[in-house]
Length: 198
Image 1 (cartoon, rainbow, N blue to C red):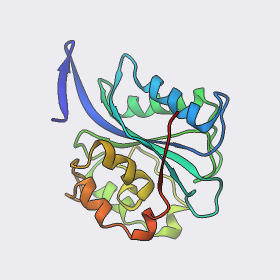
Image 2 (image 1 turned 90 degrees about the vertical axis):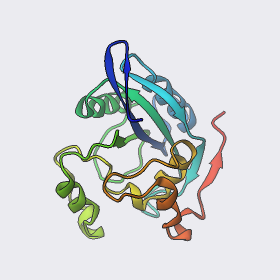
Image 3 (image 1 turned 180 degrees about the vertical axis):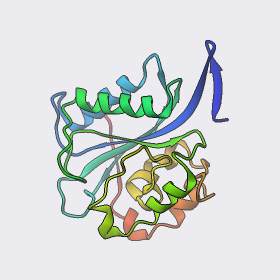
Image 4 (image 1 turned 90 degrees about the horizontal axis):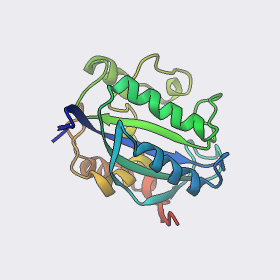
């Protein structure tokens, strides 16, 4: 079920990737992620479940210290664009700035899925999903893309997602998280390790 009624509001189930590899104004990476979990559990966004924390090499390789990554499942009454704005607000509250693509960062909140919606449409999302690697470093989407166009390629996203939504099916690919993890190159997940949140 991807939508429910809660206090007269329609709520949608969403998946969010959480990560960081630098201390923030809120403290250590682990503490920043804990605070992000707390801030995500508010009036318009309610955390249903959260994954374990995983230590993963920075992407792309050599771009900074190891990341800590997690995933959360949320019910929200916010439309997708408003939810994205809220995720950016939470990032800003921890001191996140945006200068370079794939830079080291104190907190990254990526909207992976918003129910089973494809935004803005299947053609645009599919084009970004098949974008050449070199172009990925140069181009930035000018609009919200859902589901996240690179999630199916990233072990640091899919491994935490396995903890909370292994049977969620990608609305473009028609594959579950379990199937997407199985399709990864083993080298992409070999260095991902569980890390304590405490």
